[in-house]
Image 1 (cartoon, rainbow, N blue to C red):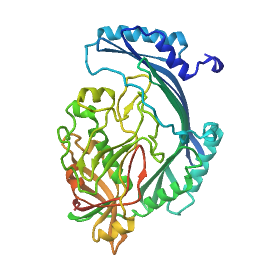
Image 2: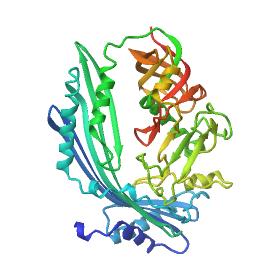
Image 3: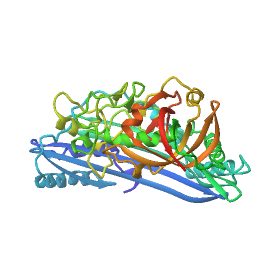
Image 4: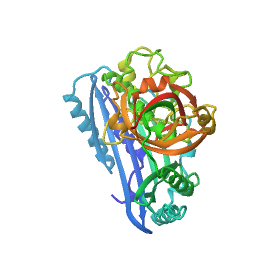
Length: 451
Protein backbone atom coordinates (compact mmCIF):
# COMPACT_ATOMS: atom_id res chain seq x y z
CA UNK A 1 0.00 0.00 0.00
CA UNK A 2 1.43 3.40 -1.00
CA UNK A 3 2.33 5.71 1.89
CA UNK A 4 -0.19 8.33 0.84
CA UNK A 5 -2.98 5.73 0.77
CA UNK A 6 -2.35 4.44 4.26
CA UNK A 7 -5.08 5.24 6.79
CA UNK A 8 -3.83 6.88 9.98
CA UNK A 9 -3.53 4.78 13.12
CA UNK A 10 -6.59 6.31 14.78
CA UNK A 11 -8.69 5.66 11.68
CA UNK A 12 -7.49 2.05 11.56
CA UNK A 13 -8.26 1.47 15.24
CA UNK A 14 -11.74 2.98 14.98
CA UNK A 15 -12.51 0.92 11.88
CA UNK A 16 -12.46 -2.20 14.04
CA UNK A 17 -15.31 -0.85 16.12
CA UNK A 18 -17.52 -0.68 13.02
CA UNK A 19 -17.50 -4.47 12.97
CA UNK A 20 -18.51 -4.89 16.62
CA UNK A 21 -21.80 -6.56 17.51
CA UNK A 22 -23.98 -5.46 20.38
CA UNK A 23 -23.14 -8.38 22.63
CA UNK A 24 -19.36 -8.17 22.49
CA UNK A 25 -16.46 -5.94 23.50
CA UNK A 26 -13.97 -5.01 20.78
CA UNK A 27 -10.59 -3.31 21.08
CA UNK A 28 -8.06 -2.42 18.39
CA UNK A 29 -4.44 -1.53 19.05
CA UNK A 30 -2.62 0.11 16.13
CA UNK A 31 1.09 0.87 16.07
CA UNK A 32 3.83 1.87 13.66
CA UNK A 33 7.54 2.51 13.98
CA UNK A 34 10.81 3.04 12.17
CA UNK A 35 14.11 2.09 13.79
CA UNK A 36 17.62 2.82 12.47
CA UNK A 37 20.72 1.33 14.05
CA UNK A 38 24.32 1.68 12.83
CA UNK A 39 27.45 -0.01 14.18
CA UNK A 40 31.00 1.14 13.37
CA UNK A 41 34.32 -0.70 13.54
CA UNK A 42 37.86 0.26 12.46
CA UNK A 43 36.68 3.49 10.90
CA UNK A 44 34.04 1.84 8.74
CA UNK A 45 30.36 1.03 8.96
CA UNK A 46 30.09 -2.52 10.26
CA UNK A 47 26.32 -2.82 9.90
CA UNK A 48 23.16 -0.87 9.24
CA UNK A 49 19.68 -1.96 10.29
CA UNK A 50 16.63 -0.05 9.14
CA UNK A 51 13.39 -1.67 10.24
CA UNK A 52 9.80 -0.52 9.81
CA UNK A 53 6.62 -2.09 11.12
CA UNK A 54 2.94 -1.22 11.09
CA UNK A 55 -0.02 -3.24 12.20
CA UNK A 56 -3.22 -3.64 14.16
CA UNK A 57 -4.11 -6.19 16.84
CA UNK A 58 -7.73 -6.85 17.73
CA UNK A 59 -9.31 -8.30 20.87
CA UNK A 60 -12.89 -9.53 20.88
CA UNK A 61 -14.52 -10.56 24.17
CA UNK A 62 -17.84 -12.34 24.04
CA UNK A 63 -19.45 -14.37 26.84
CA UNK A 64 -16.19 -13.98 28.81
CA UNK A 65 -14.28 -15.68 25.96
CA UNK A 66 -11.36 -13.82 24.40
CA UNK A 67 -10.24 -14.06 20.80
CA UNK A 68 -7.30 -12.31 19.19
CA UNK A 69 -6.17 -11.60 15.64
CA UNK A 70 -3.70 -9.24 14.02
CA UNK A 71 -2.84 -7.90 10.59
CA UNK A 72 0.28 -6.11 9.29
CA UNK A 73 0.11 -2.90 7.26
CA UNK A 74 -3.65 -3.27 6.85
CA UNK A 75 -6.38 -1.56 4.89
CA UNK A 76 -9.62 -0.65 6.66
CA UNK A 77 -11.31 -3.78 5.33
CA UNK A 78 -8.42 -5.95 6.53
CA UNK A 79 -8.88 -4.54 10.03
CA UNK A 80 -12.58 -5.41 9.92
CA UNK A 81 -11.69 -8.91 8.73
CA UNK A 82 -9.34 -9.23 11.70
CA UNK A 83 -12.30 -8.53 13.99
CA UNK A 84 -14.21 -11.37 12.37
CA UNK A 85 -11.25 -13.74 12.83
CA UNK A 86 -10.88 -12.70 16.47
CA UNK A 87 -14.58 -13.41 16.97
CA UNK A 88 -14.14 -16.90 15.55
CA UNK A 89 -11.14 -17.47 17.81
CA UNK A 90 -13.16 -16.37 20.83
CA UNK A 91 -15.69 -19.12 20.17
CA UNK A 92 -12.91 -21.69 20.69
CA UNK A 93 -11.58 -20.16 23.92
CA UNK A 94 -12.46 -21.09 27.50
CA UNK A 95 -14.55 -18.49 29.35
CA UNK A 96 -12.72 -16.41 31.94
CA UNK A 97 -14.67 -13.85 33.99
CA UNK A 98 -11.52 -11.72 34.30
CA UNK A 99 -11.52 -10.97 30.56
CA UNK A 100 -12.60 -7.38 30.02
CA UNK A 101 -11.62 -3.99 28.65
CA UNK A 102 -10.76 -0.92 30.71
CA UNK A 103 -13.09 2.04 30.95
CA UNK A 104 -11.79 5.35 29.56
CA UNK A 105 -9.94 7.67 31.92
CA UNK A 106 -8.51 11.12 31.23
CA UNK A 107 -4.75 11.13 30.73
CA UNK A 108 -2.35 14.05 30.73
CA UNK A 109 -0.38 14.05 27.46
CA UNK A 110 3.42 13.98 27.37
CA UNK A 111 4.26 16.03 24.28
CA UNK A 112 7.96 16.01 25.27
CA UNK A 113 8.15 12.37 24.13
CA UNK A 114 8.22 13.41 20.48
CA UNK A 115 11.12 15.45 19.12
CA UNK A 116 10.39 16.56 15.53
CA UNK A 117 14.09 16.95 14.74
CA UNK A 118 14.75 13.34 15.71
CA UNK A 119 11.77 12.15 13.71
CA UNK A 120 13.27 13.79 10.62
CA UNK A 121 16.77 12.36 11.15
CA UNK A 122 18.05 10.39 8.18
CA UNK A 123 20.29 7.34 7.93
CA UNK A 124 23.25 9.46 6.79
CA UNK A 125 23.15 11.39 10.08
CA UNK A 126 23.08 8.17 12.11
CA UNK A 127 26.02 6.77 10.13
CA UNK A 128 28.02 9.96 10.73
CA UNK A 129 27.35 9.78 14.46
CA UNK A 130 28.48 6.14 14.64
CA UNK A 131 31.72 6.77 12.75
CA UNK A 132 32.51 9.84 14.84
CA UNK A 133 31.83 7.95 18.07
CA UNK A 134 34.11 5.04 17.11
CA UNK A 135 36.93 7.41 16.15
CA UNK A 136 36.50 9.37 19.39
CA UNK A 137 36.42 6.23 21.58
CA UNK A 138 39.71 4.95 20.16
CA UNK A 139 41.45 8.31 20.62
CA UNK A 140 40.93 8.81 24.35
CA UNK A 141 43.63 6.55 25.81
CA UNK A 142 46.63 4.79 24.24
CA UNK A 143 45.49 1.54 25.88
CA UNK A 144 42.21 1.66 23.97
CA UNK A 145 42.87 1.40 20.24
CA UNK A 146 39.85 -0.69 19.33
CA UNK A 147 36.29 -1.37 20.37
CA UNK A 148 34.14 -4.45 20.64
CA UNK A 149 31.00 -2.46 19.82
CA UNK A 150 30.02 1.06 18.89
CA UNK A 151 26.36 1.39 18.05
CA UNK A 152 24.12 4.39 17.49
CA UNK A 153 20.38 4.26 16.91
CA UNK A 154 17.19 6.26 16.75
CA UNK A 155 13.52 5.49 16.34
CA UNK A 156 10.19 7.17 15.75
CA UNK A 157 6.97 5.39 16.68
CA UNK A 158 3.29 5.90 17.43
CA UNK A 159 0.31 3.97 18.79
CA UNK A 160 -3.45 4.37 19.03
CA UNK A 161 -5.96 2.23 20.88
CA UNK A 162 -9.76 2.39 20.55
CA UNK A 163 -12.46 0.21 22.08
CA UNK A 164 -16.20 -0.20 22.42
CA UNK A 165 -15.81 0.73 26.11
CA UNK A 166 -14.95 4.28 25.02
CA UNK A 167 -11.15 4.28 25.04
CA UNK A 168 -9.80 6.34 22.12
CA UNK A 169 -6.26 7.58 22.71
CA UNK A 170 -2.76 7.52 21.26
CA UNK A 171 0.62 9.23 21.25
CA UNK A 172 3.85 9.62 19.28
CA UNK A 173 7.42 9.25 20.50
CA UNK A 174 11.03 9.46 19.40
CA UNK A 175 14.03 7.70 20.92
CA UNK A 176 17.80 7.91 20.51
CA UNK A 177 20.59 5.85 22.02
CA UNK A 178 24.23 4.92 21.76
CA UNK A 179 26.41 2.19 23.27
CA UNK A 180 30.17 1.73 23.48
CA UNK A 181 32.09 -1.37 24.53
CA UNK A 182 35.76 -0.35 24.66
CA UNK A 183 38.66 -2.83 24.68
CA UNK A 184 41.50 -1.78 26.99
CA UNK A 185 44.76 -3.68 26.47
CA UNK A 186 48.07 -3.95 28.31
CA UNK A 187 50.39 -6.57 26.86
CA UNK A 188 48.38 -9.76 26.46
CA UNK A 189 45.65 -8.63 28.88
CA UNK A 190 42.39 -7.15 27.57
CA UNK A 191 39.52 -5.75 29.62
CA UNK A 192 36.19 -4.38 28.45
CA UNK A 193 34.45 -1.19 29.50
CA UNK A 194 30.77 -0.60 28.79
CA UNK A 195 28.64 2.54 28.67
CA UNK A 196 25.21 3.40 27.32
CA UNK A 197 22.97 6.44 27.01
CA UNK A 198 19.34 6.89 26.01
CA UNK A 199 17.06 9.86 25.46
CA UNK A 200 14.17 11.24 23.46
CA UNK A 201 16.44 12.75 20.82
CA UNK A 202 19.97 13.76 20.00
CA UNK A 203 19.52 16.98 21.95
CA UNK A 204 19.47 14.70 25.04
CA UNK A 205 22.12 12.13 24.09
CA UNK A 206 25.76 13.25 23.94
CA UNK A 207 27.80 10.28 22.60
CA UNK A 208 31.25 11.52 23.66
CA UNK A 209 30.73 11.17 27.45
CA UNK A 210 29.49 7.63 26.76
CA UNK A 211 32.83 6.82 25.10
CA UNK A 212 34.76 8.51 27.92
CA UNK A 213 32.98 6.38 30.52
CA UNK A 214 33.45 3.14 28.57
CA UNK A 215 37.18 3.85 28.16
CA UNK A 216 37.58 4.68 31.86
CA UNK A 217 35.72 1.56 32.98
CA UNK A 218 37.91 -0.65 30.80
CA UNK A 219 41.25 0.95 31.63
CA UNK A 220 40.75 1.03 35.38
CA UNK A 221 40.42 -2.76 35.68
CA UNK A 222 43.60 -3.56 33.78
CA UNK A 223 45.90 -5.62 35.97
CA UNK A 224 42.97 -6.97 38.01
CA UNK A 225 43.71 -9.89 40.32
CA UNK A 226 41.61 -12.47 42.10
CA UNK A 227 41.04 -11.41 45.72
CA UNK A 228 40.96 -13.57 48.82
CA UNK A 229 37.51 -14.63 49.96
CA UNK A 230 36.19 -12.13 52.48
CA UNK A 231 33.04 -10.61 53.88
CA UNK A 232 33.22 -6.87 53.20
CA UNK A 233 31.10 -3.78 52.45
CA UNK A 234 30.05 -3.68 48.82
CA UNK A 235 29.08 -0.73 46.65
CA UNK A 236 27.12 -1.74 43.57
CA UNK A 237 27.57 0.90 40.90
CA UNK A 238 24.60 1.79 38.71
CA UNK A 239 25.37 -0.83 36.09
CA UNK A 240 25.70 -3.68 38.59
CA UNK A 241 22.70 -2.57 40.66
CA UNK A 242 20.52 -2.31 37.56
CA UNK A 243 21.29 -5.92 36.66
CA UNK A 244 19.86 -7.09 39.98
CA UNK A 245 16.84 -4.76 39.92
CA UNK A 246 15.99 -6.09 36.45
CA UNK A 247 15.36 -9.49 38.04
CA UNK A 248 12.83 -7.91 40.40
CA UNK A 249 10.91 -6.38 37.49
CA UNK A 250 9.35 -9.74 36.68
CA UNK A 251 8.62 -10.97 40.20
CA UNK A 252 6.86 -7.68 41.06
CA UNK A 253 4.36 -8.38 38.27
CA UNK A 254 0.86 -9.47 39.29
CA UNK A 255 0.91 -11.78 36.27
CA UNK A 256 3.84 -13.71 37.77
CA UNK A 257 2.10 -13.75 41.15
CA UNK A 258 -1.06 -15.27 39.65
CA UNK A 259 1.04 -17.90 37.87
CA UNK A 260 2.80 -18.84 41.11
CA UNK A 261 6.18 -17.66 39.85
CA UNK A 262 6.89 -14.84 42.31
CA UNK A 263 8.47 -15.28 45.75
CA UNK A 264 6.44 -12.27 46.90
CA UNK A 265 2.98 -13.83 46.42
CA UNK A 266 0.86 -13.36 49.53
CA UNK A 267 3.42 -11.05 51.12
CA UNK A 268 1.82 -7.62 50.76
CA UNK A 269 2.75 -5.59 53.83
CA UNK A 270 5.83 -7.70 54.59
CA UNK A 271 9.28 -6.17 54.96
CA UNK A 272 11.46 -7.03 51.97
CA UNK A 273 14.33 -4.60 52.41
CA UNK A 274 15.84 -1.92 54.58
CA UNK A 275 13.98 1.35 55.11
CA UNK A 276 16.23 2.92 52.47
CA UNK A 277 14.71 0.75 49.72
CA UNK A 278 11.82 2.24 47.76
CA UNK A 279 11.14 0.67 44.36
CA UNK A 280 8.86 2.56 42.00
CA UNK A 281 7.36 2.16 38.55
CA UNK A 282 6.49 5.47 36.91
CA UNK A 283 5.58 5.87 33.25
CA UNK A 284 5.56 9.64 33.51
CA UNK A 285 9.27 10.12 34.26
CA UNK A 286 10.72 11.54 31.07
CA UNK A 287 14.27 10.49 31.96
CA UNK A 288 13.19 6.86 31.58
CA UNK A 289 12.84 5.26 28.14
CA UNK A 290 9.52 3.67 29.08
CA UNK A 291 7.77 7.03 29.53
CA UNK A 292 4.27 7.13 28.03
CA UNK A 293 1.03 8.95 28.88
CA UNK A 294 -1.04 5.76 28.65
CA UNK A 295 -0.26 2.07 28.58
CA UNK A 296 -1.10 -0.20 25.68
CA UNK A 297 -4.72 -0.55 26.79
CA UNK A 298 -5.15 3.21 27.00
CA UNK A 299 -5.00 3.32 30.81
CA UNK A 300 -3.14 6.39 32.15
CA UNK A 301 0.31 5.70 33.58
CA UNK A 302 1.20 6.84 37.08
CA UNK A 303 3.69 6.48 39.92
CA UNK A 304 3.24 3.09 41.59
CA UNK A 305 5.23 2.32 44.73
CA UNK A 306 5.95 -1.40 44.76
CA UNK A 307 8.29 -1.42 47.75
CA UNK A 308 7.84 1.54 50.09
CA UNK A 309 10.60 2.10 52.66
CA UNK A 310 11.38 -1.61 52.52
CA UNK A 311 7.78 -2.86 52.72
CA UNK A 312 6.02 -4.64 49.85
CA UNK A 313 3.27 -2.22 48.85
CA UNK A 314 1.88 -3.62 45.59
CA UNK A 315 2.37 -5.23 42.21
CA UNK A 316 2.21 -4.13 38.60
CA UNK A 317 -1.19 -4.73 37.00
CA UNK A 318 -2.95 -4.59 33.66
CA UNK A 319 -6.75 -4.78 33.38
CA UNK A 320 -6.84 -8.58 33.36
CA UNK A 321 -4.70 -9.11 36.47
CA UNK A 322 -6.59 -6.38 38.32
CA UNK A 323 -9.90 -8.15 37.58
CA UNK A 324 -8.42 -11.52 38.55
CA UNK A 325 -7.10 -10.12 41.82
CA UNK A 326 -10.49 -8.65 42.70
CA UNK A 327 -11.37 -6.29 45.50
CA UNK A 328 -10.71 -2.65 44.67
CA UNK A 329 -7.57 -3.45 42.65
CA UNK A 330 -7.26 -1.40 39.47
CA UNK A 331 -4.85 -1.49 36.59
CA UNK A 332 -1.64 0.39 37.41
CA UNK A 333 -1.22 1.33 33.73
CA UNK A 334 1.26 -1.45 33.02
CA UNK A 335 -0.20 -3.24 30.00
CA UNK A 336 2.52 -3.77 27.38
CA UNK A 337 2.21 -5.29 23.92
CA UNK A 338 3.00 -5.25 20.25
CA UNK A 339 0.26 -5.55 17.67
CA UNK A 340 0.98 -9.28 17.21
CA UNK A 341 -0.06 -10.26 20.74
CA UNK A 342 -2.58 -9.39 23.46
CA UNK A 343 -1.37 -7.21 26.33
CA UNK A 344 0.50 -8.55 29.33
CA UNK A 345 2.01 -6.92 32.41
CA UNK A 346 5.29 -5.07 31.98
CA UNK A 347 7.24 -2.29 33.66
CA UNK A 348 7.33 1.24 32.26
CA UNK A 349 10.20 2.91 34.15
CA UNK A 350 11.10 0.72 37.12
CA UNK A 351 13.68 2.19 39.48
CA UNK A 352 15.15 2.27 42.93
CA UNK A 353 14.37 5.70 44.31
CA UNK A 354 17.45 7.88 44.70
CA UNK A 355 18.91 8.65 48.11
CA UNK A 356 20.91 11.62 49.43
CA UNK A 357 24.48 10.29 49.12
CA UNK A 358 27.05 10.99 46.43
CA UNK A 359 29.18 8.13 45.14
CA UNK A 360 32.14 9.56 47.06
CA UNK A 361 30.11 9.45 50.28
CA UNK A 362 29.14 5.83 49.62
CA UNK A 363 32.80 4.93 49.05
CA UNK A 364 33.80 6.68 52.28
CA UNK A 365 31.29 4.51 54.17
CA UNK A 366 32.63 1.33 52.53
CA UNK A 367 36.26 1.52 53.63
CA UNK A 368 38.06 -1.76 52.97
CA UNK A 369 35.24 -2.96 50.76
CA UNK A 370 34.77 -3.34 47.03
CA UNK A 371 33.02 -1.37 44.30
CA UNK A 372 31.36 -3.82 41.91
CA UNK A 373 31.21 -2.33 38.41
CA UNK A 374 30.13 -5.40 36.47
CA UNK A 375 28.30 -8.64 37.20
CA UNK A 376 27.99 -11.54 34.79
CA UNK A 377 25.42 -14.30 34.57
CA UNK A 378 22.65 -12.47 36.43
CA UNK A 379 19.82 -13.71 34.24
CA UNK A 380 21.04 -17.30 34.37
CA UNK A 381 22.54 -17.13 37.85
CA UNK A 382 19.50 -15.78 39.73
CA UNK A 383 16.57 -17.99 40.64
CA UNK A 384 13.59 -15.63 40.21
CA UNK A 385 11.35 -17.72 42.47
CA UNK A 386 13.69 -18.21 45.45
CA UNK A 387 15.80 -15.11 44.84
CA UNK A 388 19.02 -17.07 45.29
CA UNK A 389 21.91 -16.05 43.08
CA UNK A 390 25.56 -16.74 42.36
CA UNK A 391 27.19 -14.44 39.84
CA UNK A 392 30.64 -13.40 38.72
CA UNK A 393 31.86 -9.89 39.42
CA UNK A 394 34.57 -7.38 38.50
CA UNK A 395 35.40 -4.29 40.52
CA UNK A 396 37.89 -2.26 42.51
CA UNK A 397 39.08 -2.22 46.09
CA UNK A 398 37.99 0.79 48.17
CA UNK A 399 40.89 2.28 50.10
CA UNK A 400 40.91 5.64 51.84
CA UNK A 401 37.51 6.44 50.39
CA UNK A 402 38.84 6.09 46.85
CA UNK A 403 39.01 3.39 44.20
CA UNK A 404 42.18 1.34 44.24
CA UNK A 405 43.33 -2.15 43.25
CA UNK A 406 41.29 -3.71 40.40
CA UNK A 407 39.72 -7.11 41.15
CA UNK A 408 38.22 -9.84 38.99
CA UNK A 409 37.16 -13.49 39.12
CA UNK A 410 35.04 -12.88 42.22
CA UNK A 411 31.76 -14.60 42.94
CA UNK A 412 28.86 -13.06 44.84
CA UNK A 413 26.40 -15.56 46.29
CA UNK A 414 23.36 -14.51 48.33
CA UNK A 415 19.64 -13.93 47.89
CA UNK A 416 17.81 -10.89 46.58
CA UNK A 417 15.90 -10.46 49.92
CA UNK A 418 19.17 -10.57 51.90
CA UNK A 419 20.69 -8.02 49.56
CA UNK A 420 17.71 -5.66 49.93
CA UNK A 421 17.75 -6.01 53.73
CA UNK A 422 21.49 -5.30 53.74
CA UNK A 423 21.22 -1.90 52.00
CA UNK A 424 22.81 0.76 54.24
CA UNK A 425 23.19 3.61 51.75
CA UNK A 426 21.57 4.75 48.50
CA UNK A 427 23.21 7.17 46.11
CA UNK A 428 21.79 10.27 44.48
CA UNK A 429 23.04 9.28 41.01
CA UNK A 430 19.92 7.57 39.62
CA UNK A 431 20.32 6.67 35.96
CA UNK A 432 18.25 4.61 33.54
CA UNK A 433 20.28 2.13 31.51
CA UNK A 434 17.12 0.53 30.08
CA UNK A 435 13.57 0.83 31.38
CA UNK A 436 15.18 -0.17 34.70
CA UNK A 437 17.25 2.37 36.60
CA UNK A 438 19.12 2.63 39.89
CA UNK A 439 21.54 4.84 41.74
CA UNK A 440 24.68 3.38 43.30
CA UNK A 441 23.92 1.26 46.37
CA UNK A 442 25.91 0.39 49.49
CA UNK A 443 25.36 -3.02 51.05
CA UNK A 444 26.74 -3.32 54.57
CA UNK A 445 28.38 -6.71 54.09
CA UNK A 446 28.50 -9.40 51.45
CA UNK A 447 30.69 -12.43 50.94
CA UNK A 448 32.97 -12.14 47.90
CA UNK A 449 34.40 -15.54 47.05
CA UNK A 450 37.81 -15.46 45.43
CA UNK A 451 40.92 -17.51 46.12
